[in-house]
Length: 432
Image (cartoon, rainbow, N blue to C red; front, side, top):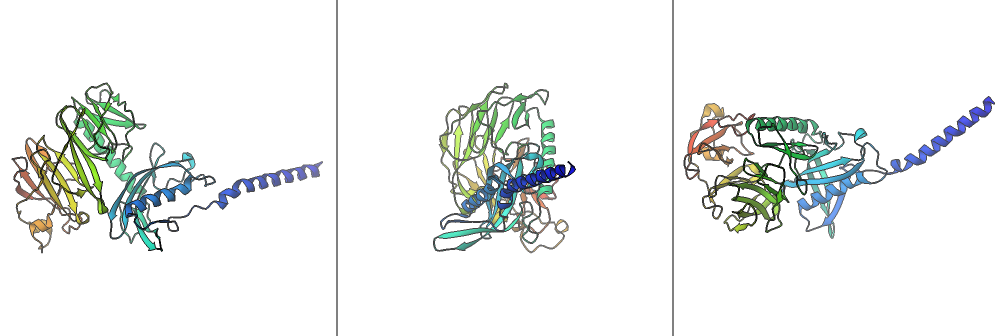
């Protein structure tokens, strides 16, 4: 009897072993290629940005197929943004949002950082290398690194800690902003809630289509306004407008189907929306300026004299006439500040007066002139009818974190140099 039980037990174990073998065999056979070994072939006319998008989708598709190990399996992916960082060295920024198939056992550090909604933020800088064949171009990744690092010597370090640090900084900043105004928002479980009474009550924003946010916990910069009289919420494809406090919104119909870059309304009736009218290599784009005077029911296109600017440009609409646009050049090494005083019809480059270099602050005797050092203007900030303009050194600056401060009493028609200073970066837009 005992021998029979042992034989039965052995047979059961054998059956379990055989079943386990055949069950796990497909998982061992299924190979997911590491980024170092993953290549794509594209037509020769494919741009770097297009190739980066195709590579990212194809690379992540591996992890969505059957028989991928549970700790790295993906349910789906959502490409948020791909931007060319350095055309010459073939470096691009890639932002995607990944959804694990099994969140509880997912290897959180395999791709990026998992947030509180079980979404993984995949934020990397990829440096490609190419090889030409008779008809195709083969793209492979030479280096893969955290975007915040962009250091080819350091290589493949995880960006998890940098992302988490920025996440908590952003959350703290949002809390400060909410405490300083009666009109603000919060995001919970992917839903946007608005307050018009200093956080005493929050009303859910009822939108026809959820906004595609760059960060799941905050609204995109330059794409929302929350005031006592009206509220605007937008992403690159949708604009919603409300003049009530009950959470109801109307989707505005723009006359063109183009990516939205920035918006601002001066009054509940009058406002501007900037869209991307076309793009070229190196992040250079054309812009379209749309103006409404009837709360977004209709728009007119403002013809302007700016042929192209960079996608990283920023906008500040002071009033219905005065508009500022920054445009960085040469990979961020320097920039231009444009000003319009006719509502966007004509833009002129702002000419700043010379300042006085403080060698004590610079800690050295500079070889460049003042305007060669301080060559990257930021957007002017208006406070009590006075403009404050900070000018930085750009990506090639060699004199620490110093900036030059200018002021204007005529809304930017002329500027006066004040002094050099080290900005208090912990508080955004603080006037030193």
